[in-house]
Length: 401
Image 1 (tube, rainbow, N blue to C red):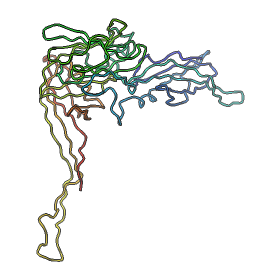
Image 2: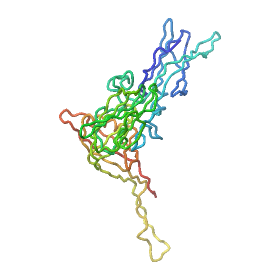
Image 3: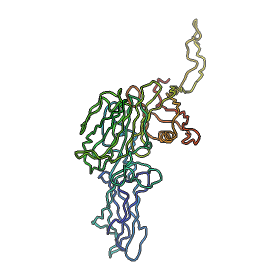
C-alpha cells in the first residue's frame, strides 16, 4: 500500500525519525531499507504496530541509522569551519543528509513460508541535520523557506555581534530558495553601500551552507558579485548587515538580518568557533582577562641508592638518578574572564556543551574543549554576567623515562 506519515521536510537526527506505512491485512511484517544521503544505510524487519479490519499499520523509527552519518566526526574538522581570513560560501554536505525508506511486505504463503514481496513502497524524502529545535517549536520550519518568514540562521544568537577588525565569523543556513548574500555597509559618516554576492547554487537545492562574514573575511577580499564589491578596508565603517535571499536581477531578502558592529582591535581578546546546537557554525570574540596556564602532572618515584660494590674512589655519584618523574602529562589551558550580556550568556552555554571547539591562534584553528562549568544565563537585576571559563588543549607530548 503506502507511506502515510513521513518526518518533516527538515528534521533533526537528535529526535525520533518516524515513518508510518499502511499495508494490507495479510502483511505480517515488513522489510525496511533505510537510505541516508542516497545510499543504503541499513535494513531491518518491522513488526506491526497495530491493525484493524482493513489494514496493518507499521510505525518505524530510523533515528539510529542517521546519527553516525552526520558531523561532527572525531577524525575530521567539520566543513562549517572554512579557511580563516578569506571570504567563502561552503556547502556542508557532512552536516545534512537526505533520508527515505523502502518497505517490502512480508506475508505467509499457502505452504506456511514467509515470502518477501519484490514490490517496494517508497516514502517521501526528507533532509536531516543534527539540530535542536528552535525555542519550544517542535519542528525546524523557522530555519528554511518557504515556511520561515524571514527564516533564521542556524545560530543560537540572532542578535547583533560585536567584533574586531581582524575577526572571523561564520553563519550557517539552509539553502533552499536562496542563491545570494547581501551586505549593507555603513560608514562612520552615515552613508551606506550595498554588495550582493552570488552563491553560485540553485535555489531548489536542499542543502546547508556556511558563509564567512567577519571583518577579516570580507574587507579587502574577493567573491563573485552581482552588485558592488567588498570595501578594501574597514577603517571608514562603523557597522554592516548581512542576510541571504534570492537574486533574479534584483535582491529579495528571505532570511533574518544580522548586524555586525566594528570595534578597534585590542590585545585582550580571543576568537572562538564551535559546532552549534542547531547544526551550524558558531563564533564569538571574548574580550577581557586572558590567562594562559599549564598543569604538569606525573608520578614522582624515589629510587634506591646506587652503590659501587667493586670499590674505587667513588662508591656513589652525585648525578646518580635517585628520584625520577614518570608518566608525565602537560596540559595547557586558557582561562577567559569576561563580562557578557544575558543573551550572550545563554549563547556561551552552547559553547560549553559543544563537542567541537576551536580557538584561533597565529591564524590557525587549534582544537580545545571547554571544561565543565556552571554558567548563569540570566540576571534580572544586572544587564551583564561575569564568567570565567577554561579552554583546555590536548596533552603535550614529552619524553618519558
